[in-house]
Length: 371
Image (cartoon, rainbow, N blue to C red; front, side):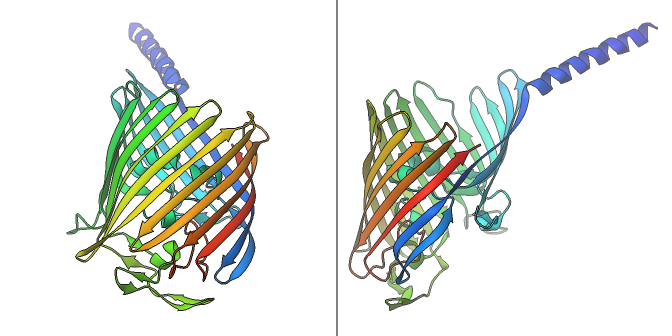
């Protein structure tokens, strides 16, 4: 009888503890939806009006979780899918289910360690300072060679520190997972950020081995490392190297922002070294701009980017107006104009077909919703 009572007490305590643990655990479903109409002045030799989704914000379906393990520790996970709203198909990550992010890890008072497919520190610390893209999702840095468009490292282990005195730092390594080839397709990233009141400063470095790029589609050049990567002219250009593999790509970036009342000014710089065989080329991107919170619901964004690479230059301006209909829904109007130097077919953000001229522009009206 005593044993029965003891068992009952233990069972009751276990049930209570299980209930407490369950109450301190959570799984959240969330996401973003963005769609609209875009006009492009010159795409592959012709103007274009099209429905385009996931522009200002990527269309996301997110499942994230948090389980309290006690003592300030917790298990965390995130599974995030990108999709095209207009046809329902998955996008990014080679059409994988969780191509945007997929990780699991442990959160402690000393930082968080996660494992999986995760944003690098260019995305974590520098991408938020890409002011042009906060108004127009097309206005990422030219071709995304410097990985400011929220790029990821697969097969990665990542450490992110807590924020101490405004400082936060982190580092990560992505494994190749290829037998006998530890280096190929691997990468690593590290960064430091300081945020205190109106001031934010950040620096980071990311490098990846043997990445595959598309020089013509991404930046509109016909020659790359002395190799012909596109032929033809006008509306009859053939992309000869859609899968151009280089030896490595490494980006050093610095940036900052400062809020002065309702206006926040931004500046950033990236230096990207691309290596092919025994040669190397350097891309420099300089960006500056500002946001103006005219009213709590209405924001104006302006940005300018200058890019130089292999003797060519690109200049791009961006302007946008965003109006919040509620905390979750906003409408926006954005526009970009890109002028490239002679011999380059202009292409904004690797988002359109290159124009067979040195300039390209877009205008977009869109609707975005967060849930």
